[in-house]
Amino acid sequence: MEDEEVFFDYEKEPGKELKDVIAKGDSKPLVSIITSYYNASLYMMQTVNCVLNQTFPFWEWIIVNDGSTR
Image 1 (cartoon, rainbow, N blue to C red):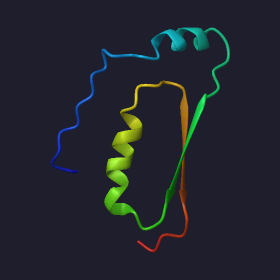
Image 2 (cartoon, rainbow, N blue to C red):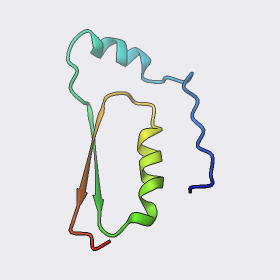
Image 3 (spheres, rainbow, N blue to C red):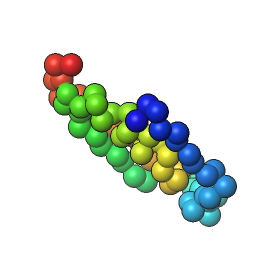
């Protein structure tokens, strides 16, 4: 994953209308992403890129390390 170039088109904002509505009122996250992590260091960079490159703006991310040994 390190050699791959990450591309994201910031011009596409499918949540823009929702973003404007929420900005006027409640700013709590609408989606919670929960990722369990147990000795998954080989896959964590790919997971981070996937979550950070999503286009929905109102989310929270919880990463749970379940006693990894490495």
